[in-house]
Length: 423
Figure 1 (cartoon, rainbow, N blue to C red):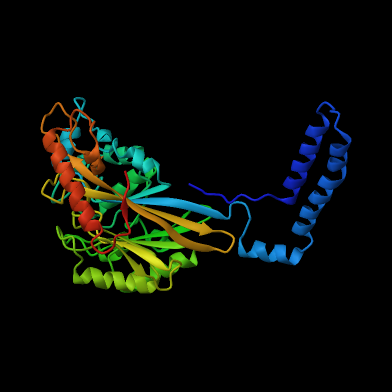
Figure 2 (spheres, helix red, strand yellow):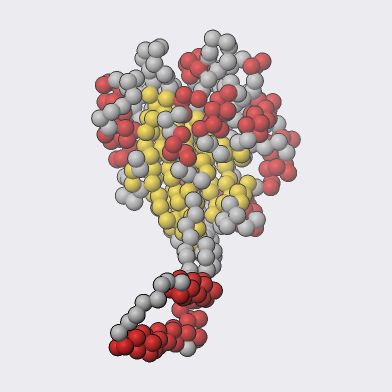
C-alpha cells in the first residue's frame, strides 16, 4: 500500500506547453476585433513571461524549497502490518472440521476475516499448536497436534507469517517441531522462533519490502517443561536478555528499519502485564525494539505507546496481549481477539520512519450450537452494530458478540486512547 508524492518536472511543463500550443494552432481561425488582437498579441505574452521569470530566475531559492519539501516521486511510502494472537486448535475444532472422506476443512473458520487480512500488506500470527502428522495422532490440550490442512486454511485466508516459539512448541518433541516447519514451508508461510539449525537461528528474520526492511524476532518465556536437547538448544528461542539484545542488533546490522519483538509471555487469563513482562519489555526497549507484540494469556491486554531507545521510531507500540484469535475456549474474555493494524510510513528521501496509524479490529469466535451451522468461525465483533447478519448468528450469539465488543474497547484503550476501532 504505497502513497506517492507527485511532482511536475521541467520536461513535463515543456510538454504541457507544446501540447497546448499545438492544440490551439489546430483550431479554426477566428476574426477578432483589432483591440482584442493587440491584447492577445502583446499584453498576454508579457504577463506570461513575467510569471515564468519569477519562477525560474532565482535558482538558489528554488533549490532551498526543494530541500525543505522533497518533490522526488515516490518519496513517501507506507505499509500496513497486521498482527493476530493465539491460533489454537482444540480437539472439538478439528473434530468439527473433519469431513466424511476423512479430510479436514478449516477454511470456514477464517472466511469472515479474510477481507480484513486483504487490507494489510503483511499478516503475522502466533501458531500455538504443532503439525506433527497423523501418525502421532491428532490431539488438543495439553499436547497439541493439528491436521496439516489448518496451515493451508491460514495461508488461504491471507496469513503471511507465523511465530512458532511458545509453550506448546515442543508438545510433540523435536520431531514435531521440525515437521511443523516443513508444513509451513510447504504452504509458503514464513516463520521464526523455532529453527532447524544454529545457522537458521542466528540468521535473524528480516523481511525486505523493497523500500523498508522489518526485522521480526520471536521468543517464549518457556515451555511446559519440554525443551530441545542441550545440543539442539538452537531449535527454540527462549527469552534471555542477552539473546534478545543480540538479535535486535543483528537485525539492525542487516538494515532493518523497524524491529518487531513478538513475545510469548504473561500469565494466562490475566490482561494486565506481570512483573516478568515488564522486565522483558524494558530490555527489549533498551536494545532498540520498535514494536512489541504479546501473546499467550488467551485474553486481550491493553495497547500502549512508549518512548523508544536506540530505535528508528520516536514512539513505539506495545500490545500486551492480542488474545485468542481462535480456540475452543468460551469463557468471558477468552473468545475475543484482535487484528492489530499498524501502518508504517517512510520518507525515502530523508530516510525517516514513523507510525502513521494504529488501529484494531475486535474479533469474536462464533461457536455454533446447531450442527447444521458452521462452527468455530472468527468474525469481526463490530458486526454487533449491524441490522443484517448471517442467518447462523442467533440473538444469543449477537448478545455475546456485543459484550465482547464493549469489553475489548475498555481493555485495549485502558492505558491509551490512541487506538481506534476499525470496521
